Length: 488
Image (cartoon, rainbow, N blue to C red; front, side):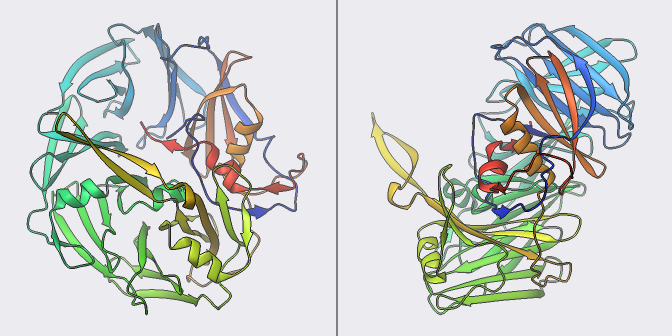
């Protein structure tokens, strides 16, 4: 399940020409349900999610006054509904969900800091509910993120004083805590200076990556990333440009294991690097002003599957798009020379993002504006704030397409379902509170139509659909980035 927030625009850096009819305006309406949500109610919230065992689809819609629960079967026919007053939940929103063995949903209601969470299980058959309360130990731990896996709700936290991460799993009204101790492991920067685990995370905060969603380059360029998988969290650290340090947090047996993936050697030691984990492979980028290296490695064996290398005087033969530069939401501009691309990339936070459609592996390589920190003191207390350098505020990027053997393939890239969804939302301002659910082999866009006063589900797929209005250019840097996606 993906929530879409229009007010926070981020980049999803893709660019390609569409030479066929576009599928962007006429996707299938699956169903609708009458709702009356007030336009300026800050408590308005809609989620559509899947029970991963029964594959029933649930919709949770709430405003200041009520919470409505809709249950659809696997054919997306409405099976049950439940609407009750929303009481004692002021200043709280839905931060997560889970499903019990009986198939009934539990919603987790919390404030922004998640200090207190109300755990409410809803019994659809009897139209009743039960409330529990969980107080998070904020004095000793800070919350990094929340996530959903296998019908459970999780909180990932960091210990304030010890080199440890905590994982809280919510199931059947019980909270199970697992602590992962990082004290046995060594952390060294590019100068071989020793760092503590907490130092690494303080300088490079963890970015959550969902395994089944496309990640924007702005997310993928972060140096520390946590990938949420079934019964595992993969934590990748790229604070040292000479290696990718990876930790596997096993959520079943509580094991914590480390793997090291060295970066390829470059002639100039002043290099920038990053990595991306996707489907048991580690993709690494390694760049200087003179060269760029791109490697694909097997996560289990460490073996290098494929390597690409290009110097500043070469043409990049493995790109499926132009070399592009973009500032904010402006139209991308093409860079003609590899040397210009590498020069601009050297001032940015480099990264790469990987996603697979039904046929190929889609990779975006490039860099995002580097965030700098400014420190200041008030009454002997130190504070910091992040800012972007105005003289290097452009992103640069290009795309490559790999086949299942990880060889470069030059084919015309068709739009992803998410591109079609984002263009639909861009063209339909009456669609509010949008969120996206990957279901079977397609995507469901759920949204509230403020004109019809209905909750509507639409089906979207990858590729072009005939007999639709022509959109001559789809710039993914414009459409795909318009609606960032974060799970509750």
